[in-house]
Image (tube, rainbow, N blue to C red; front, side, top):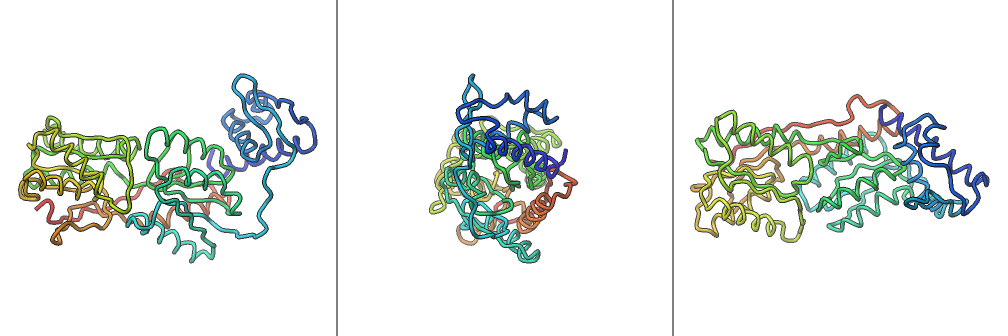
Length: 369
């Protein structure tokens, strides 16, 4: 079933249950039927019923309790509809100080302007809970749907964010992060192609002891990057060098000092490999620059002693004008396509692809010369 049909079914079930509560079909304090019983009544999956009940919980109409079921709390929603009809799409993002996010946001805004649709921008900063709050309270902004550039620092945050998506009454499109188990429409970079491309480039430059450095390794995109790196090594008859891989599951953004964490991870990788690497594939530009600074602090001359390449460009430049070898991503296109995907869902048009990928191109810089 495509997302438009799913949301239509979900909306119908939610409306029916809400109306039954409002009409007194189930009195306050009583239990509503189980998810299995409701799924049989409505001829749908238990998952769809679960999402509808999650919306009732968000509206303050019911509460869920383990073992005892779902109980009616009140007959009217706890929040009224906003007075202003915006008819807008929202874009939830951490910070436009980040070049990649800014370019994605620009593409989204340009598409909205062209379509005559108002855009509500909701920056959350590095406060993950604020991002969760925005997702949970979207209906209060009277928007029709949202595109989210999620910030998920830990695996636990991924679980909590997934629950928020399931509970949302409004359609949500993700960028950069794919959560296949949830089924949210997504626009992502072909991370496998990115890592495979930059690793092949380093191999063609004569590198053999090639390491891999990534944080945020709990998301599928980084898993795909690592697979692309391994694929390119195997093609050339190579394997990761001993101690030459760091996959940190967490990320701790600091927009005031964005290279702090990256430099620490660079030190960790180089120490693990005993400074024997001749090149490193990094998940993004920040990690590449952090690794470069770490190498220089350890007495290595990068790029003379250590070549670096990034799978994800953020428009960064190193010291003394040093340019990075990186994978250039058309982020404005990602923003534009995410708007178009959300517009299709809101218009109840079927999506041809539930998950779309975008490819970039290799830009060779000084860091791998």
